Length: 212
Image 1: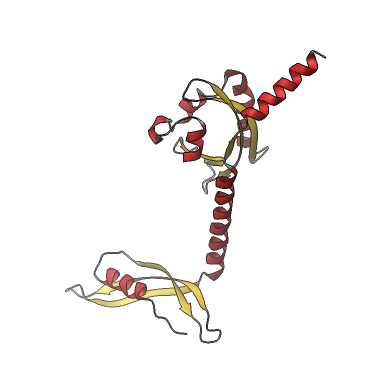
Image 2 (image 1 turned 90 degrees about the vertical axis):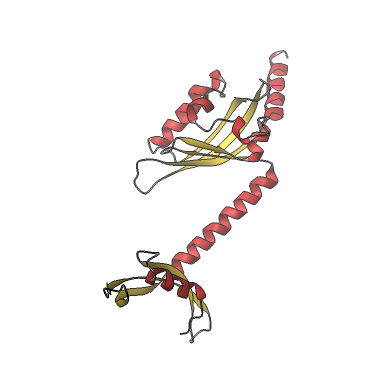
């Protein structure tokens, strides 16, 4: 096997000079048997130096992380496909971190709500809830509680949100909840569509049927 990655030399020099407490680096290694590169992780540290701070002894190991890297690559490609599909569909993206109690809104979702600037929409959940129509709040909170109780790990809801001009629009929001490693919180993330025209048509049809 041969290796020709300057990144390794840089990592070694940083550790020898004391810039880093240990070596922990991912790199690709070309195998003679296949001629293909595979991912490895190297970890190690200098365990003995002279009084002049010259390295004398170091210990470490290198292990294959090819499978992990392939999974990460597939996940990244999947996320990119999902994001591209969302952009093409006209959906807005939202995310809520339960630990930091912060929300994120994509540019498209801000546009749907009539906001051009990032700081015009609050990032805390309490202020965001004030935008939800009072008649829809109980339904929305019930769906969120089902996720927190592990009844479901996804959410799909249609509700009204207040826009910048003071009017309500109908939103169809879908998302999933993923717990963090500690199991003490997690992250909601999903997409939202403006379905106001669709809901207005449905309401008009219901009114029409009622007068038949």
